[in-house]
Length: 284
Image (tube, rainbow, N blue to C red; front, top):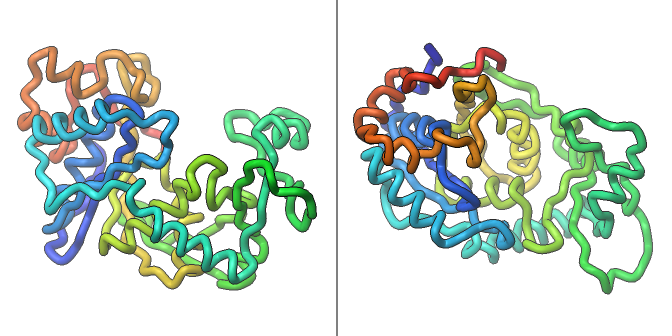
C-alpha cells in the first residue's frame, strides 16, 4: 500500500490539472490526497497551453471532481488569467540578468545534442546564450542556470515521503522560463501561482518530483515561500504501463460509465486502495 499524506489543519493544498484531455485514475488519486491533506483546498486550471487546452475538458474536470465528492474552496483559479503576475516574475528575472532570449527549435536542440538521449529530451546546449541577433522572430526566455544557482547557493526542500532533498536544478540545464507562444512556462507559472494562492502543501505524482528542483530555485530567486511536498507513487494500468490521459478504461469518465461509484472510489483511494486491474508503480 502506498503511503499517503496526513491531514494538516493549518495547510493549504491544491489540485492543478491541465485541460488537455480527460482526467484518469492517477489524477483522482492526487486530488483525493490533496483534499485530505489540508483544511483549505483550492483548484487551479492550468490552461496556458492554448494549442492543446479545450473548454470541454475544463467542464469535464469539474464533473469528475463532483463525481468523486471532492469539493474545493472558492472559485477556481484560471492560470491564463494570472498573466500579469507571470510577467512581473519574468521581469524580475530579466532585471537580475538571469534570463536570455532563445530562438532555437526542438529540432535545433536535438541536432546540436548529437547522439540520442534516450527517454529524456536533450539538454539545451546554450546556443543563444550571449548571442546577438535580430529578435524580430518569435523567441523564448531561458534561465541561465549556472548564474541562477551561483546567485542563491545550495538549496533544499522537503518531501513527506523522501525527507529533505538537496535541489539540483542543474540537471535541467537552461530551462525555458517563458515559452514563445505563452509568455510564461509551466515552471514559472506554477511556482508563482502556488505562492499567490498561499499553497503550503503540494500533493502530486512522482513524475513531477524532478520539476520541484527547478521550482525550488525559482522560489529562491523570486523570494517566494517553499511549500512542503508529497510526491505519491504513480498508478499502472492492466498493461503495467503508467497511466496517461489517452489510456483506455482509466479515465474517470470511463470508470463512471462502467458504473463505479465515485465517492466510494475516493474513499478507497484515500485508504490506499485501487480498483481491480490497477496497481501502484513499485519504482520511485
